[in-house]
Length: 252
Ligand code: BJW
Image 1 (cartoon, rainbow, N blue to C red):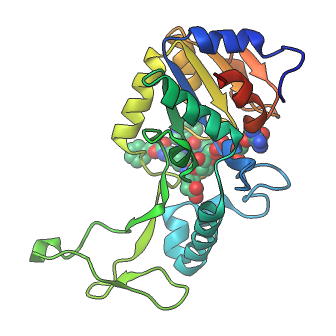
Image 2: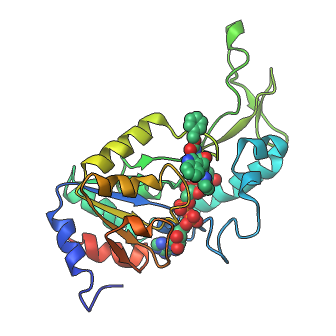
């Protein structure tokens, strides 16, 4: 969408006039980079699987090899992907006008960072990082889990105590990183414009940030080709894709 009819013009004027903009992104932000969303009916990663089997601690403990393999495949996809025109528009804007834009993302890929939003707030972790599954059971004895090995296809484990390595993402039922959530809430409270891009608004507490920003006085616009669960929290709905809508909105 390069907006020949000028339908984006009023929102572009808000972008130009805003003192501080928050862009809250979800999986749709990276869809045009070739990374599948979760809940889209035909193409989403969860179209045919139970999310709790793949994105919960219980699911990992029940079948670590299956979950590890799913994440390994996704990591491969993330490394192979490139930021799309939407990511680049936000990165260019931040470089041009430092301090005017905060990107808050639910995405676990690194495409915002690679596009130039190096300080993007990550609510749901980082798929390219690992961490130990359990708090280290060896700490009391003065050492820590630090030696990992793995059978092919299995997640690495501590050679001494069997503690497993897991992906560094936030699964259902787990707390979001407190520093990231606090920073996102503060940004939502302080911004005068929030754009919500490519999220179904199905997952909390991220989904609550739009209503929070609106309550604090911001203009809220949702960019999504489809309806989302939080459309009622927005002043404005823009039916388009991230790579189509963001470049004309954030152009120099
Ligand atoms: C395009 C496009 C294009 C397509 N351009 N757009 C309050 C009420 C009810 C439930 C809860 C609540 N508070 C907490 C809960 C429970 C739960 C929750 O929200 N459940 C709901 C499902 C009901 N939340 C949690 O468990 C959270 N933890 C928590 O609250 O802990 C409390 C606690 C406190 C203290 C101690 C302990 C606990 C954690 C949530 C973690 C979410 N994790 C996942 C997986 C991450 C790892 C991984 O990647 O594998 O995060 S789930 C998954 O959903 C992923 C995403 O970040 C997240 C959101 O999905 P997203 O981004 O919206 O994607 P989709 O697929 O849903 O939507 C894509 C959209 O893009 C669609 O709308 C398309 O139309 C659009 N689109 N192409 C623009 N080109």
